[in-house]
Image (tube, rainbow, N blue to C red; front, top):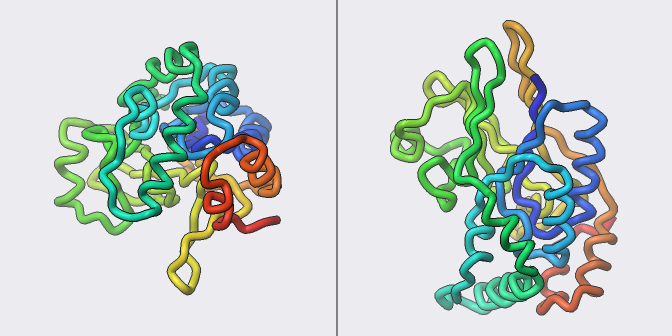
Length: 244
């Protein structure tokens, strides 16, 4: 059994196409999207259409849920206001059929891996798509997030940070972000590198392999798409990208 995990696409079609091209060459049995699909990027409808054509399960991320009921963010600073205006623009791009598709996203997705092993997928945690799980999150903080949910592999996104760690008898996996895999520079600034991230699980008798992958793609393609899209604050949105 081979399962690919993708997450946090955020309206970036070139990154999604690069990840899916590599995944499809791996001949996986299932591709699961862990949510945050369309918001905060210049190609919300195109990404939704590509995922719909893929016909795989999708988890409801926090920004996916927001698109169904857009509400203003509490003002904290100018960046918060810009994020809201970009995401509000994304919501206005969606047609009724797009929103109907988003409504099919599920809080969790469970997949049998064989021989009693299971995979449980969510966005932040099974408790909430707003929870953040990191490599250093203490076990006692994880316990309420994962209470009542058991699986061989527990997989989520939300943090845009690739991770594999143990929690009790389970492995926790985060595939990173397809569309916004930000990194911190030595100055503490966030930069978006020229790669898309995903994970590949391979279950064979007596063996479980988990690989964190990244695939390069032409970042100029998403920058050009942003400038052509009519998205607000495009100069601000594109300034953090590392051009190829």
